[in-house]
Image 1 (tube, one colour):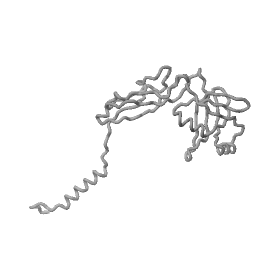
Image 2 (tube, one colour):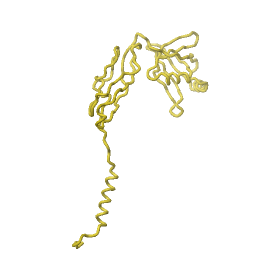
Image 3 (cartoon, helix red, strand yellow):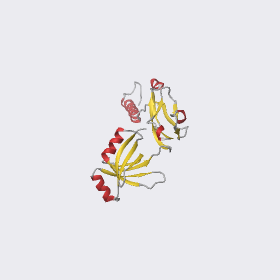
Image 4 (cartoon, one colour):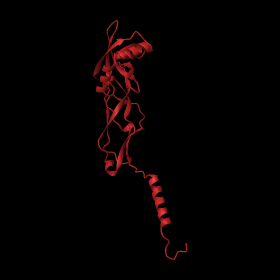
Amino acid sequence: MEATELKACIRKESGKGPARRFRKEGLIPAVFYGRGKEAMPLSVNAANLRKIIKEKKGNVFIKLLIEGEKHLEKLSMIKELQIEPVSRRFYHADFYEIRMDHKLTVDVPLRFNGIPVGFEKGGELQHLKRDLKVACLPSALPDFIEVDVSGLDIGDSIKVQDIKAPEGISVLDPGDVSVVMVAVVKVAVPEVAEEAEGEAEEKAEEEAPPKEGSTG
């Protein structure tokens, strides 16, 4: 298990005013907390945190190097990251303490491998679920779980119970939930085109000259 270091400082001020000042200085307000522990207000460098998230996709272990009255090192994961919707700037971060002897409950991404046999028959792979909720010790947490879809024909699916998780991983999602399937691609015929074709036929019949011998 690899942890990325991130410097943090204990935040002595709270409220909107100090928070705005932190952000102008390139910092973001944050908080560190753990099971049965009082939350510790922090500030971290926004650019450094963005770099970690960009380079280390998925679940990232972060070792917080906390400066205050005394130096602290805390292993953590990001529990929540608030982002401004327009500017996409980081607004606030929550770090949750990780203990090596306590199991985590996290979502692990699924990686789909192979080309389904149903592709040759016009099938389409449909992803119904892209991650699994699992419980495991930090040392056993995988970056992803592989799913082989090469054997899927049209109408076939893979459910949670069909996925073999790595050793030490307990899958918490219900086993009967479908994760991926191969379905027939349906080509929709626009109703407007059908209506236009019908109108053209009716018009042609109206404009056609009367047949010989017709009294109409």
